[in-house]
Image (cartoon, rainbow, N blue to C red; front, side, top):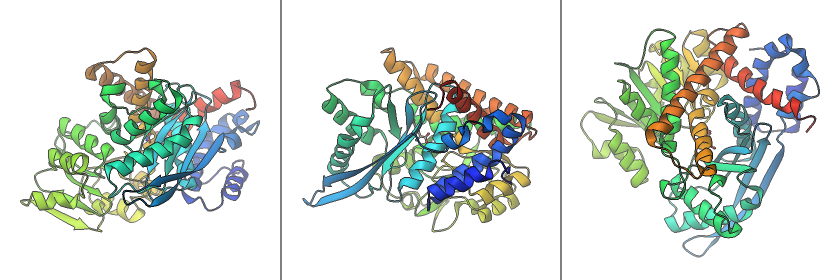
Length: 448
Ligand code: GLU
């Protein structure tokens, strides 16, 4: 899609000011492409440098994270927290531990998070953090020391009314526990609402662990319903084998679909009888091993392919749930040739711009991550509600709220796309609906 000429200089300035941050450029370009229709209809949104301000994080924190490994060696990593936008509420967004993490990646994630959080309709601003720390092969004691050191610096920037992190790639229940423990010790406050994704034993919410995956499947189900169909009897492929992928697979199965394949960063596994979820959970959540173990442990009807593309596996529904830019134009063409009907992004920005274009031109239902995977952060906001009222809800109650939120997000994206003359374009719908909510709040708050 072309960028509106009024918005061209804004993009040029973002590229200039954030040189070399390819993922951030990609995320901003996609949103600005959608906003042409907004400024054409409501030129006032182009005033007061509102769009320029939305593209500039409110605050960016970069810090040293020193820690001692099991052999007594001192290690250094870099920590980040980008507090992108607080017009709707405290900064909210996950923390990622992965060797690829750099400022540009955290900025792209924080930018996306701002619109995603707005789409949930809940009072949360956008932020993201992380470190280039590689948890792979590290002992539990090393993970704990790293988390403590990371939080020793970060804690001064957080607070239940200020900034509320959660997990992301490489950060799950264990890491949140160690970070919460350190925050509590440093501040001498039992401030449960300062982190989400906590364990049930100390203030976590039921259904938070399942929420991103379940939510993405709820979204796709509603999208399929617009074509009079559903998951029953359909074959899906879900990339990844982390928290998002596991609970995406679980819900697809509950809705009567089957899952042919899943993956990790080294390869993918295909199971003719449908992926055995208990085995994936055992390998990934308990043993913390590679997905190749799946084929080793379960020989019949299963094969493991190293370094190939999981998108070669034929399916009707594709749910990329691993990481950014994992699904390329070439993969999208293959999926279209194999008859894919719907694509729902469980990860953040997993499809390249080429891939998105190919899906949309082929008439494939396409749900962008900032809408489809918003169930995770939405349930984090429900965790904050429970913490604020010192309450804890049942699984059913929490999942019911999640399902309703996902229906609302779907419908507001669909209605916004229609209103702006692009029916069925969920990318446009999500970008505009998210933008309008943030922009209205920012305008009301004056030049800040
Ligand atoms: N990391 C998740 C996301 O990308 C969850 C963030 C949260 O719960 O704050 O939305």
